[in-house]
Length: 228
Image (cartoon, rainbow, N blue to C red):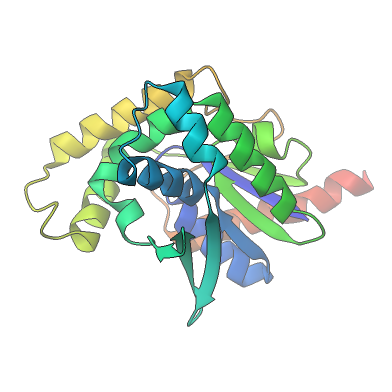
């Protein structure tokens, strides 16, 4: 069974997907990490994101892998562990721009679909239920008020990068959230949107455990649909 979890930035997609995967015994794939890894590669190689030839050169030589260590996932680019650096401000500020490039999406979507063959898995991202896995058995779309998401994002960044983010304010975090929402929802290629058959869950007032419970209820409701 394939479960997709899509949604806006800072709605808790990764946290929820991990918890749900543990609850169900499924494999979890954070597809956004792939785009972050490629963005990191572009920064490392000083790729001009306005130069298509440079982007194609980079994506054609993109060597990405995942390894498990002490129960945690580690993301590798050219054998370098970039699990922490891809969550930093440099990558975060450019990942939405990189994700709009058709050749990049085509390459990474192909990899994502390969991983889905013959497994029970949860794929978390922004276009999983609409583009990558349109026939997924269960689709979830997470939303949340911008102010709540900005507060979460600010806390996450300050915890993960205390020195780098010490001067970041809530207003700045909110501005970035709103900017990312516009980019993600209006991009020409695979815009962020709820699939027609997805269950929408507002995460603003819910804990991660409560959200997982709601998703499990959605999963159970599918049995009723099939039997009716």
